[in-house]
Image 1 (cartoon, helix red, strand yellow):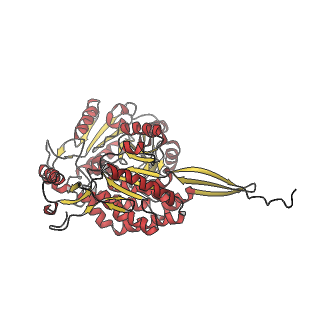
Image 2 (image 1 turned 135 degrees about the vertical axis):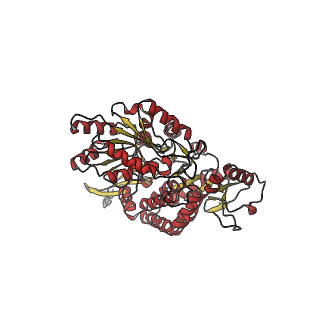
Image 3 (image 1 turned 180 degrees about the vertical axis):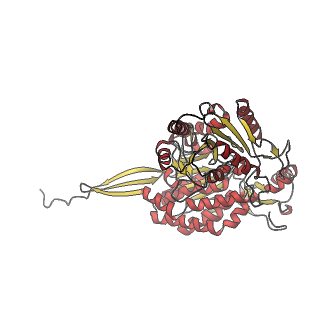
Length: 532
């Protein structure tokens, strides 16, 4: 929390390289204050936003405030981006890569302060640190160099110089999701590194950390690299999707959200002549084979409960070889029992309040009604771990689903859950392992989603088949200690199917916000001497 009597930090809209304040502000109240007394904390927030109390009297539970952008400011942000994009797109690649290096440097320098703000807005310390470290991989020297290789290749053929270049699309708009706005704001803003200009809308529900991330980390790095004003613009305001779709200035829109609305938005973008870049739901499959290191696998699988399951790239369903299913499930139940709620600043806490608790109980009832077995969990909890009918938290829950053939009739297997519910599917015993492997790989590749998939096995042949035959994921991992961890070179987001829409693929924002152009250069012939 903010120190008592300290000035209230305030962020204005950032447009064209300058601050634009407003008469109205959105106030950020700490998540701890909400957990301790939600009615009081939310009442304080409303009174501040209505101007009923003096902001100078706000206590330490108020983190800060952000200017509420009006329609004119929102339009100005698009105009500023369009102006900057023309200049920034002509900047040399090494200048833009330098901007990426400076973003990484500022991320490292501000790591502690950034984590504290994320924690104050409800991210647990464990996950906040993990997300910031993941961002460092996104702008690592390895990842930047890999993307730079994809941006331009030159060849010589038949006396011509052939250049394959990816050109920036222009103005890219980003609406970070409410469940993970801080890291995804920087992830989306990475589109500037290929020569685009970016407009980010900080969500009204959690604006302060997004403004901090872009104003204190990305904007200073761009300024130091020599980017023109307007290369990055940040506003906090109501939803702006329709304005972005209608604007002549906008080229790409990065959309985070659920699958159903996201696929409708994809069609709206195409109709408006905009490129949709979708980061939608995940329903990741994880396969544990009979020869797997079960401790390694179980340690990665309990990431299903990170943020109470309310992030897209966690393991959502497990297929366990029948020979090890009992032992794996016992490990998962034991690990789940040790995961407890707590305040976000407490070390080791990974659970967060569940926004869709009714959905959890509906999915659990559906599974149990279709023959699944409740292994552990299934209750609401208070912040101290006490079972309660009204608690903000949900106990980590594992269910067993018997049989591969009908598993996708269970809603918790077929669809993204977005709460702490992990189904373990155990195929029927009997028959050859080769046939079972065929069925399991077909099951994984038949998933309508396509973000990440993992496998644990000691057999290199099985690992090779998994890598070769599973097409529907942006990321595949084999024998990793983390299903959702980030690495240099590897894409952090993106995938196929319901995850990325019809244009879905492994997503690097430096690449997804560009288009390929081929250039053939033939040397001019000297003019013929003489003449008529």
